[in-house]
Length: 484
Ligand code: ADP
Image: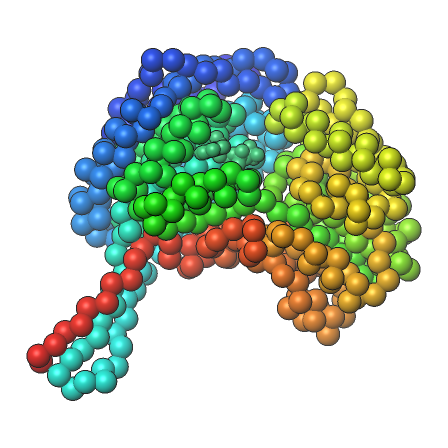
């Protein structure tokens, strides 16, 4: 699948440290999840090279920080334009190593690029403040300064967007970055880094440490232990987020964490059911259900339950599963066998406890899994409590608004939530009552660069995107001018 790139030099397999490509003493395989075939081998780096990258970033920091915001913005805008110019190639690389349908991959490239454009603009608006004085001989000023060397550890489900969402605000604020991309999807990360170099990001300002699963743990430890690294941004599982938070405690590192979700999707009796079905398809089956904002548990009110479930099942049956490079495919493979195993376990557990299978339910060949709908699901089933991260829609029946809110909030997670209603009173009541960082009302798609993305409770810390997305990359400094 990678033979037909328009610009073959985007296919980088070495890591990027201090502006140079490092082959590394050992290599690891990157595999196409649709076929199980090897695509490339990539530099498998460890602690030593990670230390080098941190040192290179620290060395590059003073000049990058001292550049004007406008100069940094100009580099970012160039990078943004290069992503769009090479969107076809980037999408091909992504589909090859991640599996999502090509059109979805292209959509991610555009979405990923939009963070760079947005933060290029925000770079120029890192305003400070002056505070009215309480002492005639003093004046109080606040400035916002780049925090320092930043580290970013990113997942495989959005191989490019999860990088730009962290790197663009860091660079905009004047911080250098060391990225550790997911071991499943390093090729997308390296291609984007190559475009960064072409855009004029100086050596050492952007470093990419590639590593396999085992060495990622070692690399992560070095990034956390380093006192030079002042900020760590991580997107991934809550489990790994906890480990990283503990590892960052000794150096009191600033943390941005975007962790697991268990998104409820509630359909009230006054909802437009066709629109709710459309929203459910978009929210649940995008990326084969492998996004942290995917609807995980669907709730439908008693009087509309059967109609909603029937309409949803009909739409799900029309989804086409296949290799992401094939035209018309809506759902690609899951990322690995472990991911398929989890969906299988959730389906088996639900059927065992009395759920009704309406469509799907089985693994197809390889890592492909049928888009699945289960009815008569209860809160006791695994699929209502754990994040399935696959193409399974379990639908639960509820009677009252209070019950739906209580069910939705009964989780340690708090990332995305969705509900469908046409009642303006209910929209405010439920919107305010849901304990989530994000609420989609009458829509299943909520993420754009302009809004604050993030969770409450054990779904994370901080917000990415929007004018708030740069906050974690700057420190407030208060200047007290005395003896005036
Ligand atoms: P997922 O379950 O989506 O694969 P993970 O949280 O396991 O999510 O992985 C997300 C990212 O975190 C990947 O880049 C992975 O290599 C990295 N990672 C996993 N475990 C650790 C760890 N112990 N220390 C540092 N990074 C880790």
